[in-house]
Image (cartoon, rainbow, N blue to C red):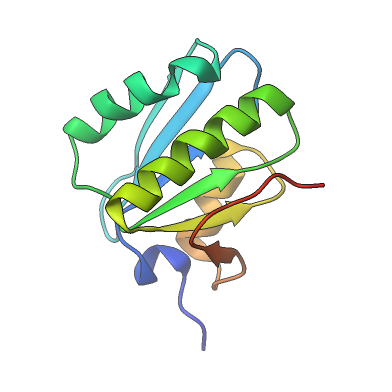
Length: 125
């Protein structure tokens, strides 16, 4: 039986920059409430908000990134920031190719490993 992603890598940072004018961040920890925030700003301000968000939490073992559908610029800015953060801290990236922020959190918490886990994420062609 496969285990949920949240049990394999805990905590998991979830990042969504697919909306043109909003950044969504969540920290999923096994057997703890999920910490979530939505910020009404463009993805270009993601590094600043990640720093504030992670300063109040345990550093993640993996980072989940929503890659589509949505704003191409927002997604690419998110990918750049997450690739850099993952590389500098030697954590894996969980690619989520469909759905919205809340659905992604739910799937990570409950469903067996069905996501692609990579060292670096790339744009969808």
